[in-house]
Amino acid sequence: MRLFNTSEKLIKSNKFKIGFSCSDSYKKIFHESKCLLPVSVGQSVHEGDRFAETIQSVDEKFRSWTLLIDDTLQRHTLMINSEMSENEAYKLSKILGDEWIERNFNCLSRLFGNSNAHKKIEMIRWDYWAHHKKYEFHHGIIKDEYENNIEYQTSIDNTVDEFIRRYKNRLPDFHLFNESRAQKLCRDYLFEECTALCLWTEGKYQFEAYPGPRNEAMSKTHSLFIAPKNPNMLNPIRIRFKSKKGNFNEESHENKSEVEINSCHPEDDHLVTSFNTGILL
Image 1: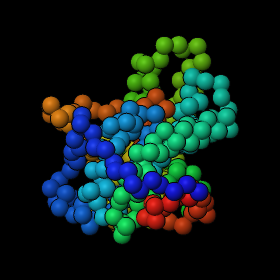
Image 2: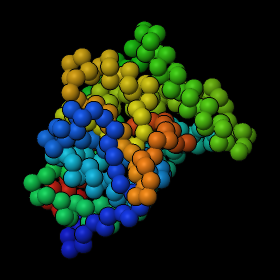
Image 3: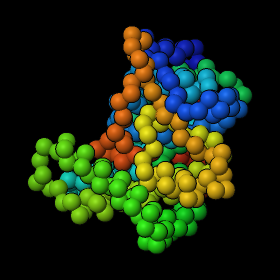
Image 4: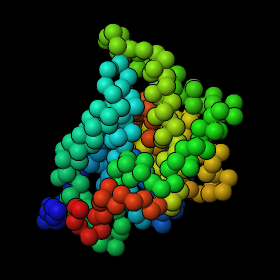
């Protein structure tokens, strides 16, 4: 157990301001809403000044929020262009998540140590959802929809194809690259990510905030499985960074990275960190 140093204040960046791209009607209810903030481990937007400014802005805007570290989800794409087994990739993705937490611990502790005592803030790791008791049920629904709904299949396949196109453009060495294997790994990634999206409804999040557009597969999953019954849940908000000397960056943040394609009562309570007490469990 480690206690946060609550005597330190979060130092705001002198380089960036944060903007939230969504309708004015959404912005009007931020203060009474709960937000999910996924973290892409290894992405520059979730490091340093940009990350510090992001969590500070989210904390100021929303009633409560959850930081979701998408670490072990990345095991699928870590295996692309490598000879790693899934078990090896899982262990590596967990290590990368551990390192991200350690690297950003001071930033997180300064924020959470000074946050409103009545505001509930959580940090959740990906396995919290992957081990959910309803995971297999929703995963089966997602895969069945892929097999039987051509529009849904197309949305996933389009997302896979776009990711692989960008991945290959950055790849210096094709020695270990196998396109059919890469396609399967990316589909498995998306099946898991879309399954988690369905489970997030149990967190009662009105919004999901991320510094990039929601990918086609996730958007279609939301429209099919969430919006019909819960139209006010998990609506996407795009985070934009504004240089204090310029305008909001309008460049599209590619759907995560070379190791990432996008963005309850689980039994694994150790995967949740509650910061409303100021203690990291």
